[in-house]
Length: 270
Image (tube, rainbow, N blue to C red; front, side):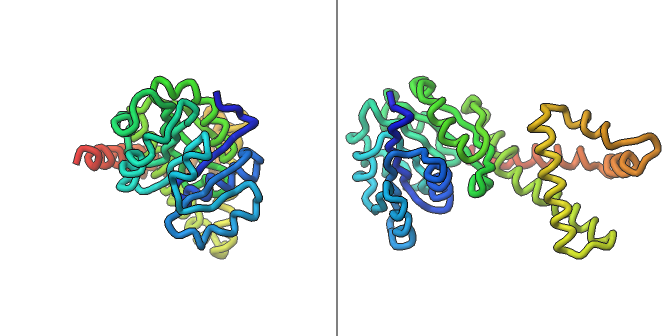
């Protein structure tokens, strides 16, 4: 079993996502050694300043010298990479894919079912250590799921789900970043209309949004409980909330989420 105190990690494909994962691991001293791979290594050479990091364009070298393999490459390159590396994979390797839409059975078709295989789906907030990352695995991979959670919990929050829910999770967590950005943008526009300048308006909107989410995370409350704390009879808050609902706020959000899911399902079938 991989020792959490002796984590030899390779990130295969050190683009934006790969580097965000590397940053989260290194800043929390989560790796004994780390390999970062990229076709052109010039832009990531300075990562070797960490001392325990090796930058290389040789994926197979990184795989041979690591136990935990985090793949963050383009889907088109992943199959070729799996085929090239399958003879190097041993019983110690843990394969973690961050590649959207690339199923575990498809990975198993390339390297076999006798490997620890885990799929993870972080969102773009991973770059600031606030990702909501969903994780699933093959049967053998369940023995290493806590290891994967430990890695991604360094960069936010993780939730283990069945693989057949990964598409829905993509909508809620990955597309969801854009949905929340639009709500913050709309709140900003409302604040500007009430007299704040654009910079102040965005500051008010984004920190209030952050506070609302933090209240739920810290308290474990239902959203309606926190709403009840700020709504008074005949007050301005309930007036605003009711007008938003008359205009279809909740309904629009739910319809948008379902529409995104229908689209991703159609793309997957196509």
